[in-house]
Image (cartoon, rainbow, N blue to C red):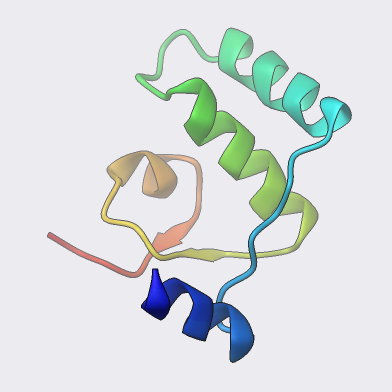
Length: 75
């Protein structure tokens, strides 16, 4: 937790609280893409990242690459 708090303090990490509207857009994306193995959490993350114009994700999850984002942790 200390590293997360430090990253937030330095402006490297932003924690975003999801509104009902963002949740709804994530749910819509989740339902529109049954061809993908994306979770609802993935879809909500994609919506949040798009709305904040964030292209890079601190993740090793290949679903972010499928959605057009750059992952910063490559397994």
